[in-house]
Length: 277
Length: 183
Image 1 (cartoon, rainbow over the protein chains, first blue to last red):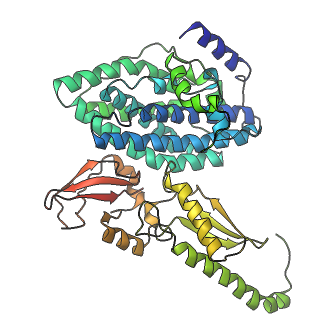
Image 2 (cartoon, helix red, strand yellow):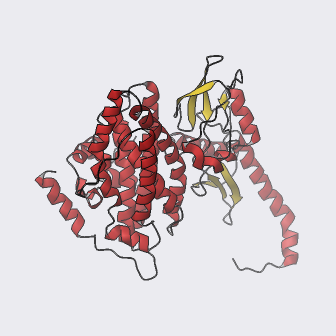
Image 3 (tube, rainbow over the protein chains, first blue to last red):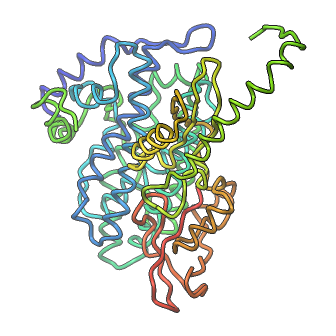
């Protein structure tokens, strides 16, 4: 992370991070806005990343597979960003929020902005996130926020197919040749430390859990770990040891990779403001 | 609404009001039944279960409730525009098309007629209920080939030409075919 990243991230974080559930059990709009952005940005950034594979995947079938997963993720992001705009109440639509925010205002976990690497590394990242979204959305469906519950109920059906696709490939690669096994095991070691952030509960996560909007992250973590362990066992892969938590993408502090993604994704809207198809 | 209706007046007013309203609803449904899915032209959006309801609102507008199949499906906007054009052409009067997310669309809602048309078109319809979707991660029952009905088939790609379909191949007749996933 560069010095400028750290500065912009701190600016973005300080003003709005003190949140709490109101006594009625409902959550404050400003807190809900930030929470919805976390979910939306995860989907948006990963969808954008997967889109880089279009025309470059190892086979046409994987080109289609990754592109379709990307499409579903962008679809989730659109629903969530539109909702975030309504919660915020300043008249911003999905495009304003996607294309006109700075890096420090993006609240996705750092894992999803990591480079695609080879196909194996993309698949490892995808398994880790698909299983996370599956366990999170399963629980968000029954949350107290109707819109989030509806988006989760819709999306979880698709996420099951994402995990079916990614875990199928991870098993094939892990339990494949010496070369494919070594590559995905090494990708797993490289990406595992970033998973800590997914489950590191902060005051915003707690406020959502207290308000009944979202599940406690500890529950999601336990279910995720059980699912991941089963997939890794089938793939003959070893789960890396836990490492200290050091990333705060959910609070706007990103790795050096996000800036490049945004530069590409936002270029058109920045160069030609309000351009429409 | 807490307006206590005068039973006599309501009964007297009913037949004609109902006929006019019913006629408009029938016109709307007939128009919607002619809107094809842009990705699967053989099947109408009514057959696919995308129309969640058509109601006459108190303000006189027809409300058509429409569900997307997949959240990122690029056909969603095309379908919406086709619905609006069909209702306009049919003279359905003032209408609004609303998007319904919850409960989420399910392949269980594809009608028997829709399934038959899919099969004729060469797309294998969903083979089981979405209630079994929890099993999606493990499930790998063979899908019978729509041409020669052999079950010696395998999955080439979990995602086919659209998110809702997977690409399979028949090892008996060697033809590829698409399977409409259960969701």
